[in-house]
Length: 134
Image 1: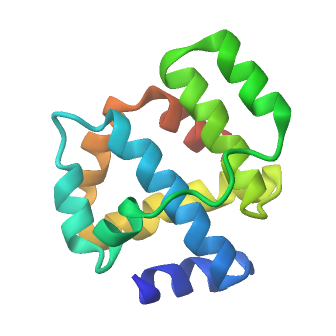
Image 2: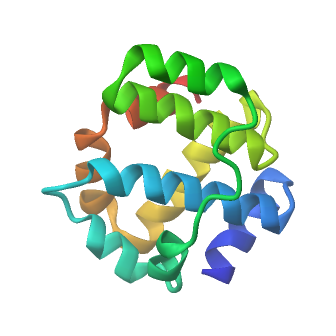
């Protein structure tokens, strides 16, 4: 996990703690909607990812608009708004969030393969939205 996080941290010029928290937010968001995919293969390919999934997210969104918007939207869209707010709370700006999600997906493809990652992304339309914004 350290190599995975350090790679993202260096690529995006963010603190390792920020990258770690952002990875945790993305993994926990994806896990919720990745049923029927090879998500567990991804987790197995990233050392320490399973442990990271078990850790609580430090902030449930410092941006009240994320929670407010999420409460109106419901479902996956609500969780995406919450994840966005949590990524902001982790220390990422809006432009950094889109770049971080793109970099995370690219790094995950290197580690677990395109088939695994593309299957997870296909199951999560809200994640696709993050990628289109990047």
